[in-house]
Every structure is written in structure tokens, then in C-alpha cells.
Amino acid sequence: MIVKTPTPENLLLGPGPCNISKGVSEALSRPLLGHLDPRFIGVMETVKGQLRQIFDTKNTVTFPISATGSAGMEFLLANFLEPGDKIVVGVNGVFGGRVAALSEKLGAKVIRLEQEWGRAIDPETFCQVVKNNSPKIATLVNGETSTGVYQPMIGVGDACRDAGSLLLVDCVTSLAGMPVHIDKWGADLVFSGTQKCIGVPPGLAPVTISKRALEVYRERSKPTPSFYFDLDAILAYVDGEGGRSYHHTAPISMVFALEAGLNKVLAEGLEARWERHEDAAAYLRSELAVFGFEPVVPEGERLNPLTTLYLPRGLDDAVTRGKLLNDHQIEVGAGLGPLKGKIWRIGLMAGNAQRSSVDRLVEVLNMVL
Ligand SMILES: Cc1ncc(COP(=O)(O)O)c(C=O)c1O
Image 1: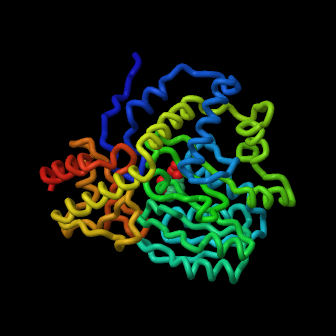
Image 2: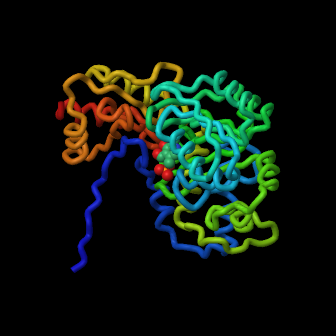
Image 3: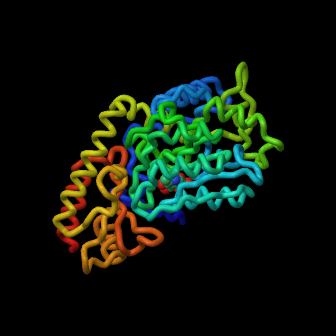
């Protein structure tokens, strides 16, 4: 007997994935093409152009890595860090911590600039640390999903350039939900993910690499110690002029889905999309304030796609989230690290960034609380 596990139609208001649109879902079920079929290569070229638009960059090397956001991080660090290299990492949550931990595994000398969870890293302090250390790479998380902080980037690119450092930025949760301007920021190495504000399932990590960074890559003392993440080998497939060589089998359906998701983003327009995410987040804060939820992050540092709220006194975190999920098919995210049990992380991403998502949550909270 074949047992089918039923999948409920949950409203995904956690830290990602979010719900996907009909267009994305249809793209996932399109007939497959071979990964070297010129028609598929054409789709990949379209996706690369779309990604340049949403990253706001002219970087030729802009494409999706075939795995989730963390693979984008690992791909960049594996290719651009060598043992003994210095890296400055802004750490104000889980994902800055992940960059630092991974850099250590790769044998780099990690200089951490720690900040209290729930606050942005002061750009001036970060620039000063970069200036004092002249690392090979300096890193900031633009949208810290563990705390709900949007990191200001002003002045950081110039400071990195002056120090001879490459600026690496994690845009997993900010891309397509809040302003991201790779060239204007002077960012050299950037990665994102598909399951947040692009509104596509998890499975691809869009990346973009500056010309300056490529020159640094050419000066590696040894080849990248990875098969799957080897930049040159991947470029021979995604960027090969006059022909593409096999490196790994591209996840065809996910690339179709990404094309559909990015079409939707560009049809709406980036600014309109950022405003929609902002409006939904503001509405969420005001509606949940009535129950006693209070913002963790001060105004001006908030990540609109992911809002963090302190729980009202007396609310049982796990029990209430369990009721929302099991009885009402609404997922919200729990706090992590020092914020565990104290906050909720509520994602209003892509098509879910609507007042109607908040209304549904409020309706259910009125029943549950
Ligand atoms: C800011 C940030 N960076 C990196 C990641 C890692 O991405 P993934 O879980 O898709 O591997 C996430 C995932 O939530 C994230 O929010």
C-alpha cells in the first residue's frame, strides 16, 4: 500500500520559506529540459539578467548556486578565503555567527565585531575595525533573520576598498523585500536565498561577484579545495562563452521556479514591493500591540520581511505556536539563542506581505489567547 503524507495548506509566517504563488507552483511542474539544452541555457541567461536587476548590479558573474542560502555563503568563503587570511565579521545574530564559524573551519583568522542581538552594527565602528585590520574580507548580514535587524550599509564599501578588503554581504532575507543596491554599496561578494522575499521554495542561492573580487580570486595561492563550489568549474557551466561544460546537473525545475518568481518581482517593481513589505510590517506591529507584543528592534533598524516581537507576559511560547500550527495551520517562528522563549519571529515575505495575512493571524490569536 502506498501511504501519502498529507501536506496541509499552512500560512507560512515564519522566517522562511513563505507560501509560493500559483505561477511559481506551475513553473515547478513544467516538463523538464536537459540541463545543456540551449532552451534551458536560455532560461538560465534570463535568470542571470533578472538577478542583476534585483541585486542592482552590473556584475557579469551573477547566478544561482544549486543549493540553499548557506551554500551561497560557503561557496563565497571557500573560493575567496585561504588558510591564514583575515576576515572581519559583524556578529549580531545567528547568521553573522555562521559566517564566523565557517571561516574558522576554513582556517581563516576571524576578527569578530560583536553587537547585542536585536541591534544593528554601528557602520562607523565596523569601518574602523576594517581599517585597523585590513582583512581580506569584511562581512555584514544585511537582513539578520534571527533578530529582525536590517543593517545600514552606508560608507562600508568605501572603507573596505580603502583597506584593500572585499565586502561580503548576506542578503538572504533582504533581497526583493527591502532596498539592496550592490554596486552603490560597493559590495563584492553577495549571496541570497530563494525562499524569502523572492517567493520561491528553498533550493537556490543567488550570488553576485564583483570584478575586483574576481581579480583577487585569480591570485589564490592554491585551487579552491572543493569540487561542488569551485568557482572556475561552475563558471564553465553558467558563463561559458561559446559553449557550456557539465559540472553538475542544474536543478532545472528550481531554475524555472526562480524565473517565474523573479518575473513576479520585476512586474510589481522593486520599490512597490519594498513599500508593500514595509506596510505589512507596520500593520503587524500595530495589530499585535493590542495583545501586548512589543518590538524587539528599534525604529530605523527593522527588517520589514521579518518582525521580531517580545511575547506578552503570561503567553506560553511553545503551546501557543503549537495551537497556531496544529489547530489553525499558521506557522510563526520561535526566538533563537538568547531570545529563545522570549520572542516570536513573524515573516511577511513575498506574497504573504499583505495586511490580509496579519488579519488572519489576529483572528486566530483572538481565538487562541
Ligand atoms: C540571513 C540568513 N542567512 C543565511 C541563511 C541560510 O540559508 P538556508 O537556510 O537557505 O541555507 C538564512 C536562512 O534562514 C538567513 O536567514
